[in-house]
Length: 342
Ligand SMILES: Nc1ncnc2c1ncn2[C@@H]1O[C@H](COP(=O)(O)OP(=O)(O)OP(=O)(O)O)[C@@H](O)[C@H]1O
Ligand SMILES: [Mg+2]
Image (cartoon, rainbow, N blue to C red; front, side, top):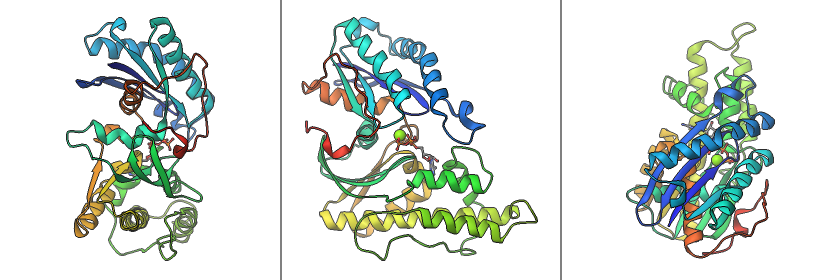
């Protein structure tokens, strides 16, 4: 079954074709980063309008790249939530309309299920069951995964998501949006041990996270070391970035280890934009090795939003006979643990 995947939940238009027998056939992404950069964050109305402009040309391009015709497509999967409602509506209405025109089934995919299953597109995919750490711009969640659609939320952030914290720290250091990769790059120049930032909530039992205190701590440290009215000097900025990244990473590592101990599982999947972070990957690999567990993640380009993960997740559900009626429904808020099992 060849499935067209459409992702438009935020600021990337992602399109892909996944074949349940041959795997990923083609994919492409148009990122709106340049559109939103001057505002320091995503402007929802601009995002929706840009999806409208890019979606159809991108679909044609991906189908051509795969060497296929539109008539070769057997199903359509589009992100139905969570996300920005206007942006979701673009992908959902185009996806649902194309499926109607081609007389093939369509399905609305949960964006975080897409992220969670993205490592399945790699050569050595994880087997079920596993613990998933979803760390993106909008989510920080630990999920017990026993199969597709069999999700139990173990813990989540009570305030900012990890990616959001990276973005805010970047703003404090006058780095570009989205901030995660910039903070990570600057942290490489940072002096180990000059600053030690608090690891939020690690001394409390449970698997929830909180990053807002760390954000305030970062802001105060920046203010204390200001050079006159401006920022701290370059080295101090790098040292702050380093301490911030270490605090986020070690908090995530501690909670992942706890989640593995609580479930008795030996596999951890990390997904979402922050799973691209090199220090997080390295520290998890070291920590999990010690307890005989293994970490899995997607290739870099499939950590952040993309169409491939939506095509994959939708293809699994469509191939199992799940699909939706003609109504176009999107859900800006949509708890992951309410999805039907496969
Ligand atoms: N190397 C990195 N280190 C840390 N953070 C990173 C890195 N690369 C990307 N990020 C962060 O990942 C986030 C983007 O990830 P993603 O595209 O998965 O999130 P989103 O789609 O905006 O949110 P959600 O999936 O929750 O709706 C941004 O906050 C970005 O700063
Ligand atoms: Mg995302």
